[in-house]
Length: 165
Image (cartoon, rainbow, N blue to C red):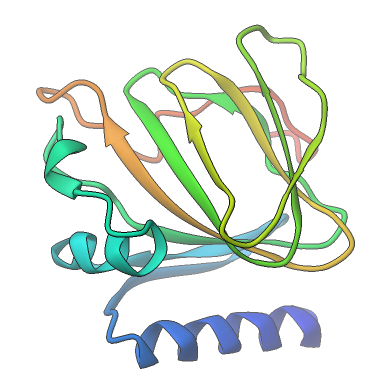
């Protein structure tokens, strides 16, 4: 892992701990960067911190929100993807990121998002998070759309992926 990646992950981990969050999981092995998963019991605190106090009860169709912090590396991009069982809400925490959105398999235009910008992605909507010139830090919560079959990491349909996944 590069020194720069180690540094940004350490910085974000310290920030989350200083805010009182319990990190349930950490993945710094993704080719595009990685993520931190926050304890589900802290979903409302996470929403208060990163989503201007959005009421998590109004989002809890499938029970949990799977709060995460995504870190995307400069000039890296996540797969062009969509989900069958969840919608997502992203809020940029740090850095400037690019996001493409479309209702078809054809990628939409690249739009830049800055800290405090919020993006709501609908179930089935194609999307891609892209690192631009520096590291991007994005808070994410899921809105499960099927209460009997909540979404998980396997609920990713990759239309295109730079890493052959």
